[in-house]
Image (cartoon, rainbow, N blue to C red; front, side, top):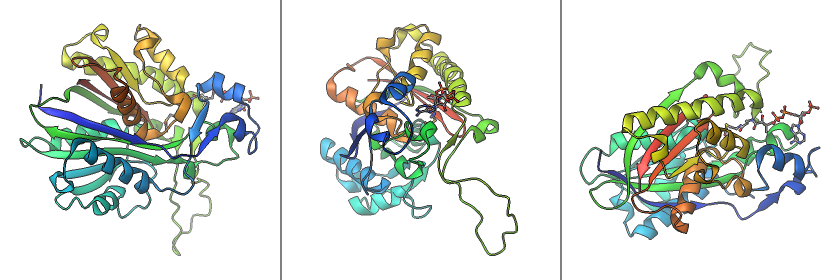
Length: 325
Ligand code: ACO
């Protein structure tokens, strides 16, 4: 057990809502197909807000909620696969905007597992007593989507969610145990944001990769439904807990069918698996933090409860963090 804790959470999504029916203007699909295959009814989409804009709103909300000053932060991490730039890091943009002068800031990319990987990195950075940091998962995936490609466009949405973290004996969600795994050999089954070698020296005319999402949906489905329960079991094992000891599971919100299947594999009732995929779609690194914040704010999660957070996606990556609220 450590004194590393989540002490506050916040989230934001762009105001513009795109219901499934509206997508039929751009591609051959239907509300019925999308709902029955994914559980998604709508997504929130940026009308120009950048990833740094959404993350800055979350950062400011976090500080306001808990009453910390920007200078109290030792670090800011943004987990994202859709940064504004390759440099500066989105976290550095946020740091500059909120004036967190004592904080070092950097981005990480583990796609939809980014928030969970970020918690692990933060744990390492928080070993000094009273250290404080901020972790935000933020995405504008709508810029990586080909809005005429129905096999991917219906799945994704934009948003950001984050947490304040501290090494503190006070109340908050305590880190219990974690597990991270990467299957790089399967990486080609989900790609986005390809950066071509477009220099004057490039002699390779055969490069056909593209910047938009390309996905072998069935391969990702198979990976998620097998690797996530295995990761959860490993993390529970490290914590000396059984799956029945878990009060709620907050999984990456990619697809309700994936969540249902994972619940079956773990032999757990579906009402332990919290979900907001119907409203937001898949927001990659933002999804776990957004849902965690919603459920803390609504009072669903109560003091003393054991919560499993799990992310999975591009890389391919999977990660689990167990916390006690
Ligand atoms: N609307 C209507 N028809 C569609 C659509 C659509 N949006 N998309 C595909 N179809 C059609 C296909 O063309 C195909 O038609 P055909 O049989 O005539 O060829 C048929 O529907 C079935 O297509 P499949 O791809 O086999 O559909 P499947 O049942 O596997 O569902 C899905 C596809 C939802 C993508 C599923 O494979 C899945 O959820 N995979 C996991 C994907 C995922 O979650 N990725 C993100 C995780 S990682 C991250 O978060 C970045």
